[in-house]
Image 1 (cartoon, rainbow, N blue to C red):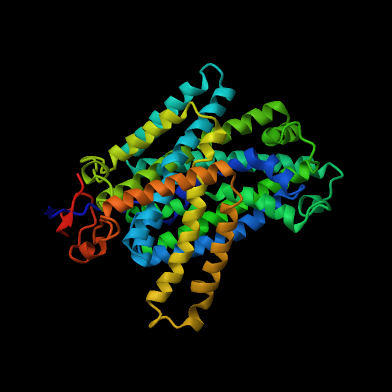
Image 2 (cartoon, rainbow, N blue to C red):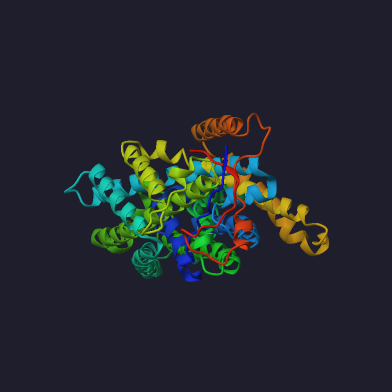
Length: 466
């Protein structure tokens, strides 16, 4: 049965600075301290160079995301881009793939933050900290993105202050040693292959730069600000990661760590003593709350767009709170997944997310090539060869390489998730005989001047899933 439905659009509230703050918060810049030991070990002491390589690799895909965001300034990220360039069915599968990232990354963020809060503030167990953090983040996101933006700005400032203090103490300590600067850039034991191995892990620090594209409908002048914001997020994160890892490597060029998983804390203690290490670690933990807020907000927006399209039951996933105009059900669903994940190990939890992220990155590069192909009559190849062919091909190759650097568990879980998505798509499309459900949001925009949530913009008839 067909029914006229009304498109609900999100309120433009964020400017370019707010968008970059959101993206950098999502990536959690303090993660460089936590991953330093692993990356230093893999790269044979060239952690900073590994981050340089990783930044360059992620910039390729960021440029592709920027081109897509400029062409399609609607929320939904890779789901929206693939629908418009590759068709509704591949668009659905792309959205399904990235859901693996957006649904479970908040769970991982809350799990890790709860564990570290429990270790730092022992008067409550880790699971209790996890419950408090999930409830707090959910409340902030329900009230709205404007509050979340203010909250993220404060917490990001705290974590960047902690990182800046670490860099200052690290430079002061390293300058008083016999360690040459070159040992932190390219030590004798480092090779292209070891640095590439380190870069494969360092690239995980950038997961989430694409999340700003899920907020396109909540950004002022999205065709200008979202593409710039995506690239600025990667560059900002890269600068923080490279500088911090360089100073830490300069202060501790040896690969002799008590435990590579806690090497970052060892370096903090080395350069400033245990009290300094505790203070910096606490600021990074507090700043990590901004990442928790951001990852939940992104996942809820993707679910909202897919619900609005009718891919998921619209009355639930496409619902917006009358007062706050936020996807409350989606936020509560992600919170429920987070509660369930508090009793997993970090290894099991993180294995759920990386597959979706890197495969979605690869698809984004394919979408750029498809965009050029569809518009090739008005876009001569000569002028567009670099941006629409060479960069996407390089980005695709890097993303596929990173995908296959994942462990067997991640690939297995990811493949199962993809198979379930194919089965669900079979059901939605009656055996691929019809397109996946969707709304002509751009057409609706052309027929109305309103850009507010709750605006009644008829675009039916569209099959509705209740």
